[in-house]
Amino acid sequence: MNPSTSQAFETTVVHAGEDPERHMGSLSTPIYQTALHVFPNAEDGHLIHEGHKPGYFYGRMGNPTQAALEQAMCEVEGGEAALALASGMAAISNAILSIVEPGDHIVAPASLYATTGALLDGLLPKLGVKVSYVDATHAANYQEAVTPKTKLFYLESPANPTMKMVDIEAVVSVARSKSITTVMDNTFATPYNQRPLDLGVDVVVHSATKYLGGHGDLTAGVIVGRKDVVDRAHWQTNKVLGGVIAPWTAWLVIRGLRTLALRMERHNSNALKLARFLANHPKVREVHYPGLETHPQHVLARRQMKGFGGMLSFDVGGVDEGRRLVDNVKLCSLAVSLGDVSTLIQHSASMTHAIVPRERRLAVGITDGLLRLSVGIEDPDDLVADLRQALQHV
Ligand SMILES: *Cc1c(COP(=O)(O)O)cnc(C)c1O
Image 1 (cartoon, helix red, strand yellow):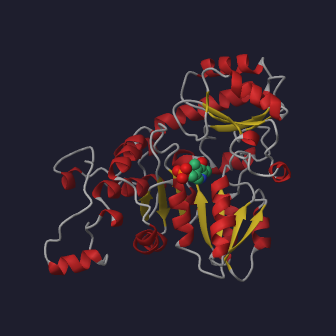
Image 2: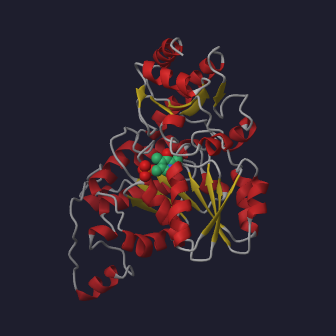
Image 3: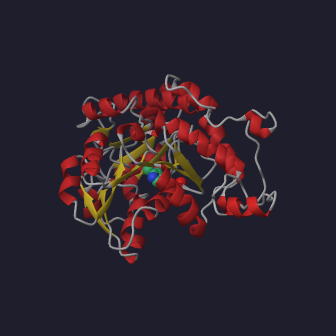
């Protein structure tokens, strides 16, 4: 289905990737639980195997259910091509490895999803790729970090767990002037709230484990954007890395996409209500949420986001206070991950960022008493009541 440009996002997500004619009239794309597709003849066998003719032949190289998800992601992000993979990290590592070569240089934000940091610090240097970290809240810092070898700008906004923002258009404009490719992690915002490709970003990556799947019951990732990069990821990088998505998982992500707009509307409004409640609570020192007027980049958030998302973080003072709070919530679940229909809370200093030395943590704003909240779609008053009673123990 080709959505007209005037079609609302709410409509696009319900129908994206739909193609009953190709699937015996089936409105829901079937799960093609097969690793093999037979070739009609030798000539087609050659062409399909080499990617010169569309078709399927072997599970690692594509599957019709996976293709329906890829088509859907092109529609919801506004991209030319997409590749669905086994996890968000498969998508991120694949996208980066499809762009850089030994000797190349990457500029990335200091405040970053921790495992992406481990990829940039651990694997890439072994392949001869250098990385510089910058305070990404100022686009000029990207410009200053550029060397003649810079091939890729990596962006993440809002950033985990500090909710710092990157001015997407400003960074893209620096990149374009120097023929540098931009890759952006859009997991936190989702295409409902933020459309990086429309702002000139070359490639978007997602952990579909989070909002796209939406129910905390799958692990998946997606690369979407410039066709030359996606083709290289499909036919070269992932051919050898093999991080393919399972057909059943691809179907679940499509199922999740159908309600993405509805869920995000509620995630957005619930998070704003909780952010306002926390900002006025005497035991809370600071709340980080782009939708609050007090967020240092609130004006930028209004410019580049439609809504402000379901993620926020707040500071209750010290490590002990943070631990006491998470030990006393009843409705919120003490769990990592995010983007689930249920509300999840975690204490960054003792959990996701426990391995990061304290000085480095503090330098990027991950303070001792910082709690990250992935606000679910429950009734907001019930969530406020739960946090209110838990804060009494802090
Ligand atoms: C979870 C997450 C990832 C990694 O995704 P996986 O599906 O766990 O591999 C990458 N970036 C962000 C922002 C995430 O939240």
